[in-house]
Image 1 (cartoon, rainbow, N blue to C red):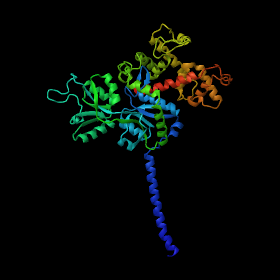
Image 2 (cartoon, rainbow, N blue to C red; image 1 turned 180 degrees about the horizontal axis):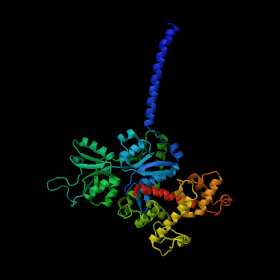
Image 3 (cartoon, rainbow, N blue to C red; image 1 turned 180 degrees about the vertical axis):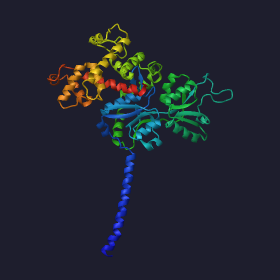
Image 4 (cartoon, helix red, strand yellow; image 1 turned 30 degrees about the vertical axis):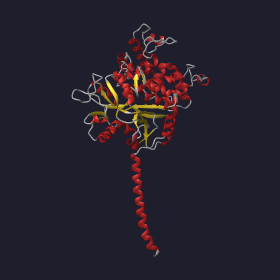
Length: 479
């Protein structure tokens, strides 16, 4: 074959291979566009925070007397400390939406009572189990504890799984309960009417059973036992599954992050701290008092007995009442009689010289104290408007820090930042650094400093604590 004929044959083949490769590359690009990048341990460390979705209920995550609490919440705080990152916690009681958010990379971890099932393991990676539990039927007790059936012989309490045939059971959409009931329906060879609802969480269904609105639901045994203490008319003794492992879910491919969390869970489960946290939420008689309290925020929507006052006064200056509540919790823990060693007093812990400006004293009412504090916040806001460029995005941090330690020290920190080439209009990594270090001679003796020494760690932590608590209030309480 001549060279010319050979070239004529080879060139079309090369061109076809080139087109096929381009098509495959385009397909690969499309797949990569549809699937967001895998989040790994190094990404969490570089970001400085781990993004977690949990659900709010009486065991996992809730607010009680202004303080965030919950089994999942406390475990996650320990995990974040282990990773040396911040915990960014959001809530979603819709399991389908929560799993979708994880799959799309909008969060790094789902931390709920998630049973590790084969179906779920096809889509997600799970950590090693942090606990085990069974699925149980939640039903109402009879009026007579000694009766097992009515006059017609119909069972009053279901003890045999075969008796679930024809019954209507309400469960959370996308839950392992739904999956188990489908399997159980096949096992008993009869129909179980399964009603799923993505808007209701497990404990909400339990409450509906207790009230008589529905007859049956399914729950994890540990959660069911806790709720039985709130609703003594419930029976939770009928198991519908073998013990199941509970774990946290990650996206497929999160290998290093899973390995690190697995090692931590394995070690932490052996600790007395884990046992203490577990007992606190699942074996604690005080749980009834907490849930029945007026300040159990999931049920009441309240933080403190001063909420009406806080809402009215926050509205005076267009402030989110939950933010003001977080500040008051930080200052006084909602104790109107609180008084510090330096003389600050009341809900807002006003210093005497500040209180004098707004005509309040230790004999003033809580409402007058809060109003004076709000007016002082408004004063700080206006003063900072004159010095911060373009209404700086971090103005809230400047206001909170000024409320704690005084405007003068904040202005000093801004001058130090500007002198050293940092942005005086930005808080994180700029002004906060100089405030934090204003207790060191090389900082407070600088010629640009006018107000001298400041123990900067206190306002630094003050700002972070208030804003972190505010996020928890936003998660659970409506504005």
